[in-house]
Amino acid sequence: MISAILNNNAGLIPVFLVLALLIGAAAWSLARRRGLPRWPTVLLGAALAGELTATLFPTGPGGGPDPSCTWGADLSFTLHATQGQLNLLMYVPIGLLAVLAFGRPALVAVSVLALTGVTETVQGLLPWIGRACDSGDLAANALGGLLGVLLGCLARLAQRRRVRPAGRELMAGGAVVAALGVPVLLVQSLVLEPTAATGASGATRAQRELANHDAELLWGSGARVVAVQHEIGGPGVDRVVVTGERQSFTLDWPSGQLVSLDGGFLPVEPDPAPATEQQARDTADRFLAQWYPGHTTTAEPRYAPNGGQGGRRRFTYTFDTGTFHLDVDRTDRVVEFRRD
Image (tube, rainbow, N blue to C red; front, side, top):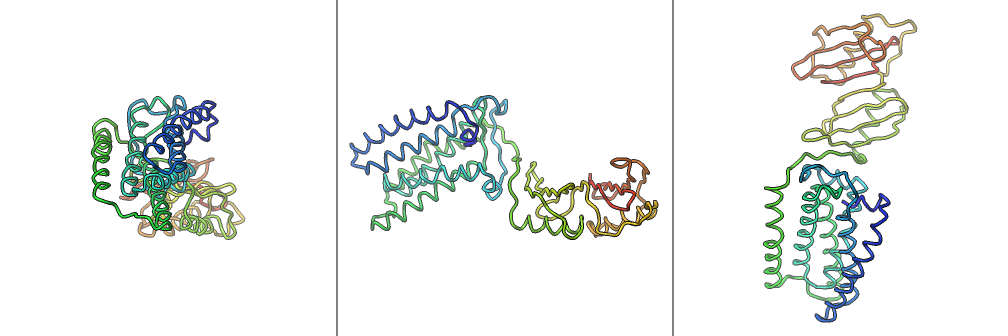
């Protein structure tokens, strides 16, 4: 996680500068002794200082009470969030500069994966620093690092230098896996408690198109959608929340099935006089037939004249798949919907 960069932590920049000087000086010395390219090696040290500061600098209370790691967020969801994009960008220079400095792409790729695994595991082991282990962060870090390795390989090819791994490089990569990868897997399996991923991010193009389509069905032609958000609330809970100027509704994703409605209405002309009970019942039946066509509406719903939101008529339908609550106002509009 690198949200600390955005939180105005007063000590973060001084810590980064100190680490950059220390690691940069060590990298300069290493480059002189081993005959490595100096500037890529020094800049790699600065990039590693940035990674350590951004991911492990304490941000205060905020982590969970026990060591844990969140699993389940898919990469596309993570990369739609600003933090996921920053995580990816943070690791690109690490992979790129490491290839330019050491010239061993395969070993660098393994080391980048090990680095992000160790970082996330340490975050999970130290919840008191205000950080959290997250599989989405790990995936974004790994993708950024591997992208950097690819860019480094392209740079070496442009210089007509070798990118194919030699036998010793593969052996060194295996040693990194044994020394860092195996302990990370053991700690993740035996020490950290797995938790389900939750969160919200911007919607994809397909989700926005579905939101605009359903907004017209619910609110009428020309309905204005203010915001569309993709939310994950845990295992099997993947939804799109659509907000209008004064209404909102929630869709299951990727099925597109309506989950709830707040303030929406069917695009029908309301009667000039207050709707009768039968008219309200017909409206509720039509709503269910449109949004849940596989459910029969011949069953008699429970009716509460003033049981809905704001004293509106409420119809409650019970099916094998769940219970549906619909509130119909005096102008014959479905203004609330909820499925239990």
